[in-house]
Length: 527
Ligand SMILES: NC(=O)c1ccc[n+]([C@@H]2O[C@H](COP(=O)([O-])OP(=O)(O)OC[C@H]3O[C@@H](n4cnc5c(N)ncnc54)[C@H](O)[C@@H]3O)[C@@H](O)[C@H]2O)c1
Ligand SMILES: O=C(O)CC[C@@H](O)C(=O)O
Image 1 (tube, rainbow, N blue to C red):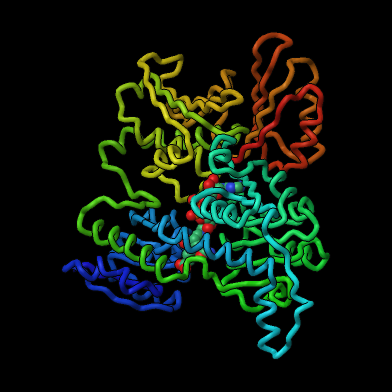
Image 2: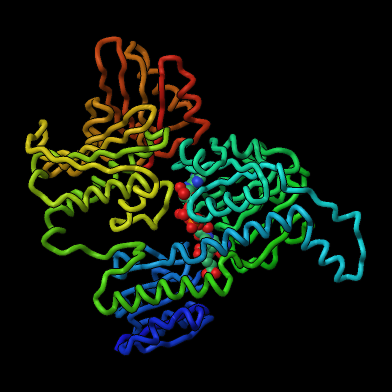
């Protein structure tokens, strides 16, 4: 018998696949405090949650029998994925089941904002018949800016078009062709922020998206803009939002998600311009049934030895494959991570080549790892070895792998190239015997850098004095250079400088480097 713990309220109809299996003992015990869950978790083989239960490292480390954690929904930010993976526990989610509900909730928020429906309702409940105060605006012919055009963002776009809104979106994987096919406009983040009358956010909460909508972003928006967040708390900086409303810049905000949940006692809730729901985006009978069915199938199947449909992480690989390729895992992922940092346009193709010792090795897991490294900056931690290629395909990126026995001067070499409309970028790395991983080529230039920490790549003209100017500028910002590499195409031609520095460089510091006339391009990459 397998012991299954359902720790958040799930649809009873949705868990029928689990009840139908004859080897599952199901315990529904919701609202447990962390210490209670920690005490009980030891005897369970599977844990099913929504967003309330925080599955922390402390809990996972007490879960000596746990084999699978299922998240009945999309966001897995309430689960410590690293701890689950380290402990060989697979995490699954239900990425598609609540898309419609979240998109419908977003539209309800937009309509409520535009017509002041919650405020007018509250006033009427207080027995006031105020028809002047709650005059709204039509959404027809207004511009809706969508930040994050994934599953939910795209559904919102289609619905907004039905309301005759003009839609413009930004997503790092959105191409002009795709936007044209959907009948919407596309632009950079700034262009979307500048053009929109209403803005709705549909990205995951990642390092990249945390406080993406801050005071700078509000400054770029139209006066009187209205903003909706049904994605994740923390993408909008709540303090910045408060000030933007009080200053009159933002006319209204609709929030379903918050930096700290439950969110019941916050100055934003005091503002009449703010309407809010308690994380209800996925709370429909249909969505709850579908997500519960999806995760129940995965849990029952997995415990009975079948593959899962929606893995978020992946426990260990078979030992024989692992032993040969494990040393290259980190390198391949770092090459992908490095490359996305230099990919300034939409990626269309990724080519991964292996040379030397890697010629007769099973390299598919390394390619998945490289693609994972490339995608995770924008797609977050739910990209893993299993779904990386699928997600790349969904984003319209084709992946090619090739091998050559020739050593190309290194006993082993992994090269990753990205092809964009505007050109190509590439990076190669090797494992040096006894010295660990090295990046040895960037766009064909020879370098020698450990793929770790803060790297600054500078494309510049090969003339005397550039290195000195760069050193002085960094010193002015109190940035210590740890290592420096330079290579060039020919004397006086194009050159590359690779620095490792002791801390992250922010946008303003990068801009001061870009101001030097000998510099063509500067990118800072944190690995
Ligand atoms: N309120 C709710 O109850 C509820 C319900 C479901 C989902 N969600 C949340 O909604 C969000 C979207 O879910 P989804 O299923 O559409 O996810 P998705 O993965 O299909 O789409 C997310 C999109 O965001 C894009 N993105 C990543 N970084 C970006 C950036 N810096 N700028 C612009 N776009 C960026 C990605 O490329 C991707 O296309 C998630 O945060 C999810 O957790 C909330
Ligand atoms: O479980 C819920 O109701 C929230 C789900 C939602 O935030 C998600 O990310 O899927």
